[in-house]
Length: 452
Ligand SMILES: Cc1cc2nc3c(=O)[nH]c(=O)nc-3n(C[C@H](O)[C@H](O)[C@H](O)COP(=O)(O)OP(=O)(O)OC[C@H]3O[C@@H](n4cnc5c(N)ncnc54)[C@H](O)[C@@H]3O)c2cc1C
Figure 1 (cartoon, protein in one colour):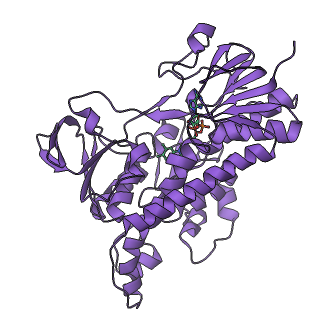
Figure 2 (figure 1 turned 90 degrees about the horizontal axis):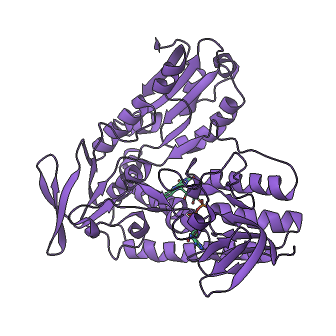
Figure 3 (figure 1 turned 120 degrees about the vertical axis):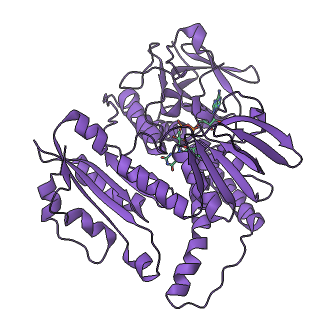
């Protein structure tokens, strides 16, 4: 049977673009891709990239005081949201162009339309055109969801935060995950009076407890009103403001309320039900280790499968799919020991097990140190950093590495290599320290602070 394409990709985000371009560019496959919104997807248009640029923008406010302490005669000025936002829009347009060109230059035919699957080898575009393909790859990502409660329609999500008309005077951010906590730091750094509600006992659930505790303390020290075990009861419009009633009995008014309490996979209304493609509890597409669904010609990668929702993981899954299906080399995706950064202020870099997870699994030694870094200490700041290693007593392997410090994301990429290779505590110890840097503590901690 002959098809229009060897591969039809639905979704032009991190995973879809990579899979399409590698399949076409490296294997000569005839590939098409449909994107209903903007090329680059969540990461480039409304995720990692604009967020990191906002983190950069927000960090300058704290630098002025440090610079003065180091002898610089500079004064804090105001932040010009319009200037920044104009440049942000231009940069995102540029990056979208890069993604479009990647596809074009690799011979991928793209359709600027929504697509759905009508049978195991046929895709239907929004204009009704049907295309057949030997393989279909669903890479439709996810979207933020706001829970239903009185006034919930007044909330914005991370999709809108990048395009505020003006910077608010105050903001409420609801949620305790990495997106909520990162935006609390961003807004606070930009000079917005920031409150964060989280219904649980501590933000950043699932990460190492000591690290989460330090980040929350530091966020509060930076001026964010983090209110734990607090949720919104109802929101009402009060002139230009939003009045928020909370479970702690408080009632406050905010210019903007941003919800970052959860995301859902984009797997509805794309024809999966009729084909019998299995979905999970959150609606995610169920796939095997090769990203194949129960319908052999249909694969799915990235956030729509809700495995590990990060850009490099979606990219890996896309490359493994091409390796498996187009290069004849079955390649499962390795989801173990993924290093990751949380761009809170302070930043966290983490790989492997938290102390709590490791202790539940086996006997461990915990090496940890928290100190004032040189630059901040000289400037008279009270900020602390944390370096922490979790070590297996039986194998001596480093099971987890957690860093809370400026630049922790950069550090964990490198520490992640050692941990992924199975480095032992003794391997860390025999590595000579780099001096004077914060990360030298990772190779100079000699005595465990506790065993568990
Ligand atoms: C605020 C925020 C910050 C983030 N920060 C980080 C970070 O710092 N580091 C990190 O690694 N990850 C981060 N992420 C996660 C990262 O963005 C995602 O894991 C990644 O984008 C997933 O890629 P994907 O290819 O699965 O989906 P996406 O990038 O979401 O792409 C899916 C694409 O499919 C399109 N689409 C959907 N349905 C259809 C359809 N039926 N037809 C045609 N097109 C369709 C969408 O328009 C979208 O462009 C962040 C996410 C958010 C929201």
